[in-house]
Length: 495
Image (cartoon, rainbow, N blue to C red):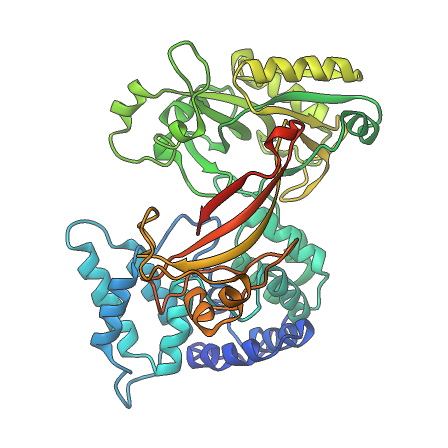
């Protein structure tokens, strides 16, 4: 926690971030990156900490904020060409001014919105030096490439505030806003961070499950008895309600309230003053059978013509957890107690099909029922487990038939553009494994280095400087599947 009398500027120049970025890029040492960031954060005012943190991890907006800039490469390129390198003697940009301008760009709507966003970008680039423009471009395209991911930033925040890393990570799981967490840690200390909990009408990171290796192991991990429920092939959601206000969030913390009026109507009818319910929405046919996930995506996140599409593609809600009820945080409570509270709150028709058992045979039979009904498999949940926000562990297991694929990248070739997935090869060139990933051409096309080979992975990312390039990858695929006839299949994939 920073001292109350800490002398911090009210308008830190954006140039300070532009100077820090290459220093972070030049070192591969995690501890050194942490130290550089921690020292930098300690020099900022409270209002400047959130945007600075988000800009360094190429976020611009928090995970829990659905805002987007909505600017394409062509718009950015035109704005940059018009602005030049910024006028000499212009008043320096500040961190807060950059964030304010990004907010303005994200808020642009209506006719001529592309031109309006371009004008705002021109003004921003026009005030920026060449180095600042480079950092702005990296932020806009989400390509900072300075080796600072969320984990490194959390550790740096903990260093700057002299707090435990675990408390910072836990607070971020609840808020989904690393910038806000950093400000609380730096200016409110341990008491402020430890007081962070779920905020109604703001999303929290969902609890995650591991893939079950074997049913006997699931029962052993869950002390001989487990709760299994249908694993639905739908979209996971959080439903928040306070009084008459309802907000619905996706698994990735996006606000999808406008897209799911059926869910809002159900939430408003439940007899409670406030709650957070977790559930899944499915698109169904006239018989109630779930439609493919692709069909669901025609509805999910759709914000126009919802009523018309609602008649053609209705959604069905299944609830499976209750995290908050009438002012009480239920997440520390055992899963069995949360389920009992959920049963009292929502009609039985809205509950996901569920079975508590200690029998492997019963689990197998229940799995067959789920698959026959068109679902993905089962979820197994430890009856005594608390809700672990944002964490993956053995308290929850996914049980489903699956293919495991080993992929080895063999070659890359020029494509027409990013949007033309079926585009033909421009030059007709074919490269060997070594040529494709060791050459300067490949590094330019991929915008970075690539590692590949058996068990390896390629760091294949778009290069904003060359947006007209698409990398098409040929891969050898080996499928580990119970049916030997499916082994050794060859596939071609596109990135």
